Length: 161
Image 1 (cartoon, rainbow, N blue to C red):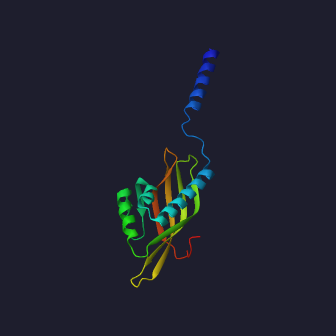
Image 2 (image 1 turned 180 degrees about the horizontal axis):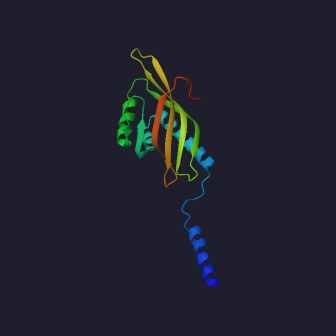
Image 3 (image 1 turned 30 degrees about the horizontal axis):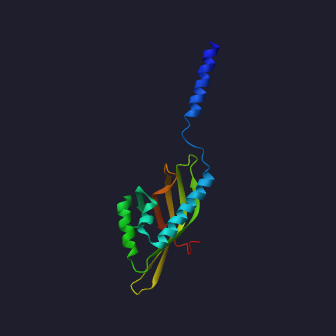
């Protein structure tokens, strides 16, 4: 009887060890990766390559902007990016200030300072500053995709750096 009990317990332990589906994640290292993904996205936004810009969003991503209806999915996001690129003097940039990643390594968020610059009716640049929170999901290929992007005007911000 002791043999069967020992064999049973050994089998349970082996099954539990073998069923571990989540690789061990270093949340701090992943937070650094997430910060770099946000910075790369900002660089690509500065360059204006629409396909690269859209590629950072998940297929079903949601963008919540002040005073506007939510944009859902890459089609709506593409329309917004294409429309913005035609606005005189349009410029966008941001700098991530902090990032956190869950212990499982599947989700993370970035807090950033962002600005938009456009020209007014006289051609003078007008800059608006925002505080932004982006929520990201790590995909099976190891890439991070933005799933929710929300920002609000923050008059206390006068620079993104």
